[in-house]
Length: 106
Image (tube, rainbow, N blue to C red; front, side, top):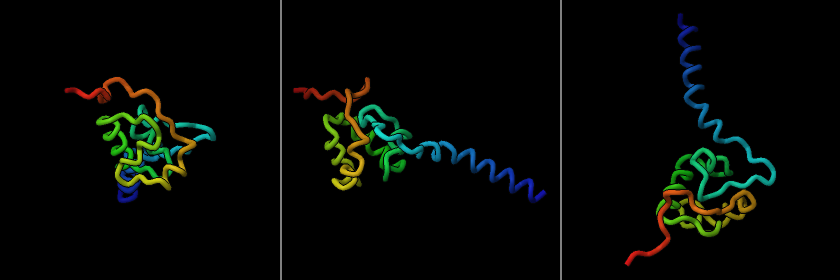
């Protein structure tokens, strides 16, 4: 009885953790992640990016889409050393539909 409960709890934990574990799939050589289009799970594949940092990137680009990879430096917790490490793996494409407009309203 106790063993069955332990197996059931372990299985439940693994099922709940699997999306987070799947988000850490290693990047293939030459693979690039678009900072303006990637979802949280895709952003988490970048080295040093956990769920909170990925959510911060998404929140920032919602306010102001990135025009160049260096624009990500405005996100709290991201610095020049991190960007230098991942620059070959990031790109900045056109913002996804529904992103904030870059045109100022007067």
